Image 1: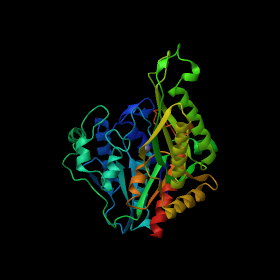
Image 2: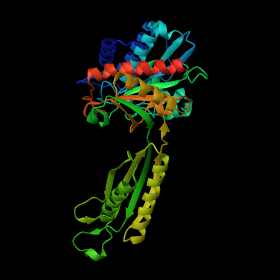
Image 3: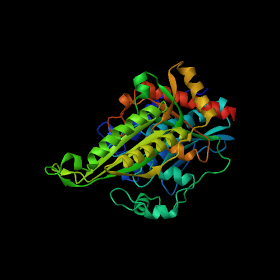
Image 4: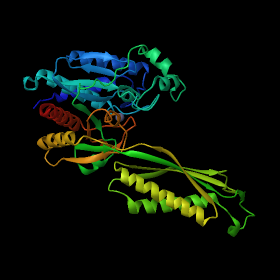
Amino acid sequence: MPTIDGARVVADLKRLAEFGRYETGVHRPTYSETDVASRHWLAEKFAQAGLEPVIDGIGNVFGYARGAARRLLIGSHSETQPKGGWLDGALGVIYALEAARVFRDDPGLAGLGVDCVAWADEEGHYGNMLGSRSFTGVLTEAEIDHSRSREGVALRDALQAAGFAGKPRIGVEPGRYLGYLEAHIEQGDTLDSSGLRIGVVEGIVGIWNYRVILEGQQNHAGTTQMPRRKDAGVAMVRLATAIHDRFAQIAGKRTVWTIGRMLLDPNAPSVVPGRAEMQVQFRDTDETILARFAVALEELCAAADKAGPCRCMIEGMSQTAPRLMDEAFEAAIEAAAERHLPGGHMRMPSGAGHDAQVISHKLRAGMMFIPSLKGISHHWSEDTREADIVLGAQVFADAAAAILKAG
Ligand SMILES: [Zn+2]
């Protein structure tokens, strides 16, 4: 099995974090000057690892292992959230780089290769997972024409300024890969709070979002007698409580649900609210549980509507399908974790979205997590113990070797 160089992994992560350093984290939005500079730096690192570097028309950075008979594609995204952390995305890219280096140097792995990739804009500064969706062929030219950043910058202009416009966009080359692997920090506290150090990702959750609207009668808060009121705010709060109670009864082991947005209209202290709106979201890797939640939510809304005095309406806003990871890849990651850390790992879903869910439509895909201290992410204070970073790189490289050897 390959032996990684832990100090080299940590040094490369720290160097990458210099591009856009902010406090102890990184501010490196997609196609910003620091992001473009970091992508050229990554291309250079890929070249030093013996890979052929190519930056494509959406800003994905590839490093091709020429001459290998069997290959995995390994990587993650390299931009960050605004004032984000130094490991979110970067970890998976540097793990890929390290895997490529040990594969190059280990005679026992001759003929087996790792292609590295740093995807563009997983974090959604300009769109939804632009880089991996470009690679899998679902990002259209029309979508690129219309996409803008939150600040209003056109994606076309950003690509032009970055120097990526006019380059071909690289797609999946049929037959080139056994599959895709991605390592990532967990971004939750499941590992950190349980003292475990490796997460074997079983799937990436589907996310279903609904808007629930309550319609009553706006009126004077002093003169409207209580029995005559049609208070949309009261109706919403009661319904929200009923939803939380019902979901708790029907949830799977790891289902999560959130009412993260509530609005009252007109939202004034001396006015009985005439209209209220809330958004209800739930996540699970099991589509049957998601469907069960949807039925329960619709039933509760229908019952609230029937009971009155307010009308209750529900509309679906968005639904993403859960994506399961490849079982053989899961087993390989688990076996590698068990070799280095008996009993110190667990299988778990990913509650956050990742490029692997996009790639899983075209290639067998696997994901591995390492702990996030206190579960903090999407914040500059995000961090992971150095020993966990090094251990993760070793387990990950071992898993890649096992998958490639098994063919
Ligand atoms: Zn990420």
